Image (cartoon, rainbow, N blue to C red; front, side, top):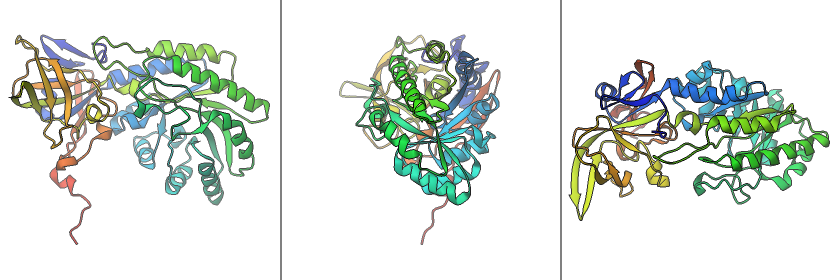
Length: 419
């Protein structure tokens, strides 16, 4: 099951995470519930880190993939740096115990309040997407008596060959500036009094199952760094972004971390540039599942429906992207498989986890695991239809603990007022 990390396995027909039967978590924590393997998260992070050993580097975990405090604290203790895209993510990282100096701030729409917050805390650097943003940071830093380190995000015009919603490195995308404009932007940047343009940044997209586009972008960025250095710019680091994909279904191939970082290291040979990577999905996706309970079975117009207690409010990827997530029974059954739509309780036709899926014959009361759900799952959960967001659990070896309590009905109206 390459779509799951090694801790997930069947033992005597029951699905486990590490030494913990997932049915135990479902019964005690309730469903829906997200379950993450701490061991597998750390193993993926260390594969990046160890693969670049000897080369100057930082592995900046992309908080947007999974921002649970327990996950962030786990990675912080392992020596990770962090890539954020909002002031709220900075708050989470700091609350998890990571130093502000380990943080790079990406994102196309940073507000003045977020910039000031990051400057006051003393983050490592800003990755800027326009000259207007550079001007804002320069002004804010000047008022605070600070000097900010920054990189400009470059669009290297490399086709990531991924879903159009998560492709970000072409000329027509909203992110960054075109590579043809980069040298002029850095020349004008010399006039900034409170910003040091010491880096280059790019991120061409997400869920890349081949490293080829990433390597193409890296080579273009290395060449740009050399051109800028030859013109007197003090370029110290290059941030290649994240983007390495994972297999979401049986038989799907994806570039492995070790192979990817080996190719990067080879191309860095002889360079003194600090390499920053921003992996998110490839660290946490396979290390997480969403557990759900079957509520009903229903037939109609030649269709079979398995109605579960999880929905698009817990995991929106199938509805938003048409994304595939394997669905496994927590207990294997001798009954013949079925072909069904797996749907949730939300009042939308688009509320589904799988369509026309060949799957285990699941009956009301049975438990299912929606796989490869550790990334872009809980972070995109909502309260649509006034549904409390689910609990999150972290498994470490033979034990587990609640990493986030399930929301209550009172949580749904917190902060609201009747005038």
